Amino acid sequence: MTDKPDPNRQAVQALYQQNQSALLRFLRFRLGDSSEAEDIAQDAFHNLIRSENTGNLENPRAYLFQTAANLALNRIRKLRRHTHYQQLTESDRESQEVPAPEQSVLAEQDLERIERVLHKLPEKCRQAFILSRVHHYSYRQISEELDVAVSTVEKYLIRALKEMRQAL
Image 1 (cartoon, rainbow, N blue to C red):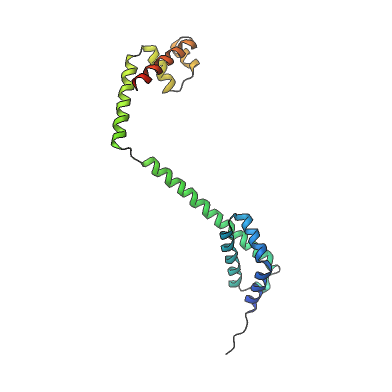
Image 2 (cartoon, rainbow, N blue to C red; image 1 turned 45 degrees about the vertical axis):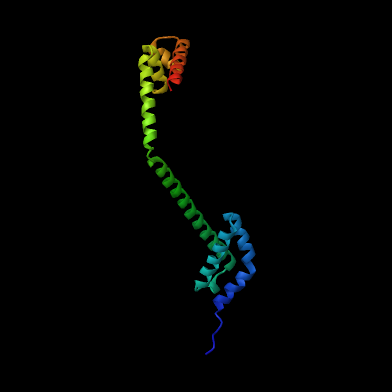
């Protein structure tokens, strides 16, 4: 029993020999990675071999390049999804990290010191600090709220920050 040569396979082999280097350059340009380009070129030729109507194509080279372009686009999309998923899981992991007990204790102690300093400050100085640091008011907004000059607000905040630094 003799094996007849497969005309479809022979056509793809000829197409491969004529276009392999051009296809690899095309894919390297699109993907920026030689290894990925080689994989996709191989997949594109493999798809052509499996196709039953390769002999009926008007422009097999165009078909090959379009197939390769589609495969490259699919690979790029897959990599983007994977990268996006990795970034999401990393940010989830970071946000779920529980501080060590020592860190919690230190943070709690710092908070207590801040509260003590705030209670020792004069009323308007304390209000200016809270409006600035907690509510993100501008100096002008604070001056209007407390009915004082902007320069007075600056002095209040300088004093409050100085007291905070000394306490911490």
